Amino acid sequence: MLSCLVLWLYFVVIQEMEKHPFFMTKAPEAGEPLSPLMEGLQQLKYSETDNTPQGTIMRPIKETSSHRVMETFPLTLVSQLKYVQLCEKKVL
Image (tube, rainbow, N blue to C red; front, side, top):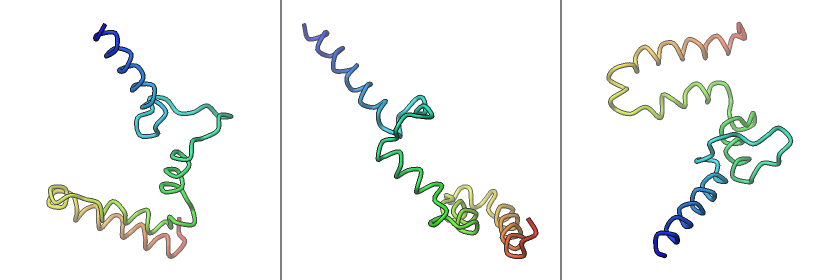
């Protein structure tokens, strides 16, 4: 009896996790309404009012760990700053 309860609880937890945006294994269909959590995540990531091109480029620099800083930061910094300069000149 206890094993049936554990199995049922496992499937309930899996179903609830499938509804959460962080744990979804497939994206919602095109006409399907998005959950408020998914809409909030999309606004954080793709909002044009909150994310400027320069801010989007500079975000990975701010989020790098100390390990990555020592290995790739100088090259990343130079290439991303060059891209920012090109964006400001509207070459791209």
